[in-house]
Picture 1 (cartoon, rainbow, N blue to C red):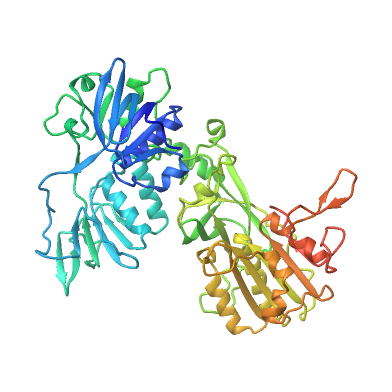
Picture 2: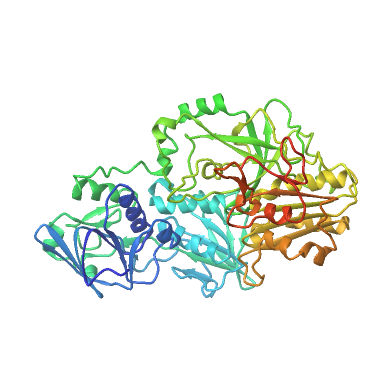
Length: 589
């Protein structure tokens, strides 16, 4: 809902820069309510943070004046007037007359200075810059589908705003951008109309790009640009974001983006404890000795592979430092990291201080490579590594996940905790007829144990129909699809059925629809006959739909119809610990 024509706020931030977003987020998290960003344009830096952090932003609002009004300030924009206790002017402008310090082609529509090319999907783009704005441009081009290299030679992450530093880490972690922290090109040449970046740094080869974008240094706008009165400046409740005062204005307060939130809080809001935590890059250097001691005490395995399917979905392999990894397909193991590790997001763990030295442990089904390095079916059950298929769990109002936001920052060579025991009864033990029909149904990463099961069945020479169906949101969420397609080519009795639910070109349907509409028979000629069929279920509990106990001792199915209810109506029975059946389900969810 839009604010009224006249509104009262504690803090008004002028401009939607990375520093503005950072201060708005940190202020709200510190307990300061009524914080508003006013932005003359239609977008702020890192717009994805507006919704996730519930930021209050007024778009299309140009500030015309900032005046003192007793103990308050009055901010007038092109749309309305605000009464506020403090103002941060975050708008930055390019330094007049700035030109790149490296030689560039005289004329080229592929070399840009402070402008962004319109179409970069699947194109190689070099961004050159060392400030928040360079990170903003890199993030925007990466989101548009470009293959981005950021040359930020001399960039200091501790001098970036926290929002920019966080996004920079995300871009690197997601493999959406290559970051050259220490390297800058010596010159930009022209090779057949395309820019070539030449580096003297031996670590970086000369690279050809479709576009090169220079991001200039910036300075804060001056008081006149926002109509700051002399009385308003004298109030000492107006700050300009930057390291030096605006041109021709030595009497205003200036503070850099990574520090300005603390300066505003300690001066304008003394009644609140607004002391910000140290910048993330600084926090990582704290307690270094203690953290290494805790890792040595608790961690017993090393990550040998960390391959993102996309930013929030990964395949990783783990090798224990002692002991073996023998297991049955379908079983699971526990992984763990300490609360002392950094998070990829900015969520705050409850009671972190008292849990800082503890481990977070979670169980994950063991997946399979499917193929080994020579193209044969992989035998991972007796090797020395375990493969896992893991999705990043985002924080919500009701749940702050602890493990996956920390696991997201790990890389090959990093250590973690691996539980000493591989466990689980969700295995193929009951499938003792090579002619039986085996149906594997999953949602998301619940596909992991089925990957291992499919490999074992085919290795054993199972010749009955095998169908693996997985429900995901989008095609991009299918980390193993290409491998399953190769299996289909080799084994005519194996069928893979991915069903994305949020793709515009695919009719929306769920796992339950496959049963209700007899799609296995229609597509593959496979009949769901309880006399010779085993069904395996792993994933969302709502998809599985196990019966629940009632007060009178009987059981009833959930309101949402699940696969178990549909199958039991066809004569299938649940596989229970003391009562074998042909509907098998993973139990550690």
